[in-house]
Length: 376
Length: 141
Image (cartoon, each protein chain N blue to C red):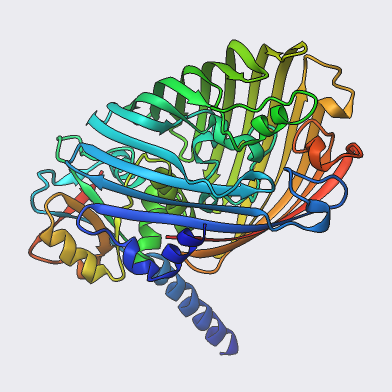
């Protein structure tokens, strides 16, 4: 992270310019999390934690009019998650034959819903934390990208029909060895220490219609994936399951509104040396959000994010999470910005880990998230 | 008399605002671009990163201004976005591996110079500085 910070601090505007067709861009963020009751995301947030850092650097080059190649390296730290590990966020070759047909191959971002592929790019969002019901900060690296290929394009439906953007993809993906899911599997009572990341195949697609009414987008995503992994003392096995997402957004001048619904039923088993644990989830998540740019540099917004596991008793706080959020972002200039955000969380289905909440979770917990970012 | 003066001052203020708001922005392209006009939809697609060619098949590379009246007017008129939303959309493409950031310029004159010297380049500028022998002005239909 130190190297990234140094790279970003020295002569930023100069290196942001392209050298011929090569482009170098990057971002770094540093956050503070402070919560009223439970500790969030494996960090000691009740005492205030600054263990929340993100950074990435990308290099890309347009080799011909139609062919572009690039790579992005990314690292993050969130409490005990992430750490000093530089990961390849994406690395791809992109060949666009026609506006309606292009191919992308390598490690490519997975397009699911409105923000899945950009959820680790803090600089583009008002929110310090996207709705946790579907963009879980502690597990974002799992759904973020896949190794494989994309077919994509844009089809114009005429002046009165708007246009359709589509993406189809297939490949495989793996669990982040330093992410939230692995952290949970590593803890009691399972004690599964995976030497290599559990992985599985994934295929799916996304279609979004940009309506003739300027600023209105409506879309849906579908994704089928499985997951298998083996540890010395057991493993994890989840057969193919279907994730569906439906969404819409509207943007007009300073005003923005969006909503999204996601359904993701998963069943599987976790065999250990001593016993086999069957598990099932039927995740239903939705959110509504709106924001307004008060002045050129200041944007404010709010969202309500709702999650529950329909396979269990949804009246129990352990099986749902409801989050009211108020947020603001101030852009000092094109490069620096700051965010201040308040979360009022009810329910404990998301965000909390036994390891740093040994006394159990309180049903209600508020969280203050403050973040400063730099991008070029 | 007093009322006339107040009316006159308000009229001046109103007209001044109108002139300031009605910043005339034109679309300029390198002379290698065959088209003499561009549709509103194509223009939006090119400057949103959804397309890199016009309907006649000409490959184009968008270039933008860093700020200023022509920049704001162009975004508002043809993309329906403010500068922050425009920049965020491009950053989203760049950091997800789906696009390359357009080259940006501090002044209209610098942008026009670059467009004149770069085959396929397409940009926008205040009408007053767009008159350059190396560029053509595209009508937006």
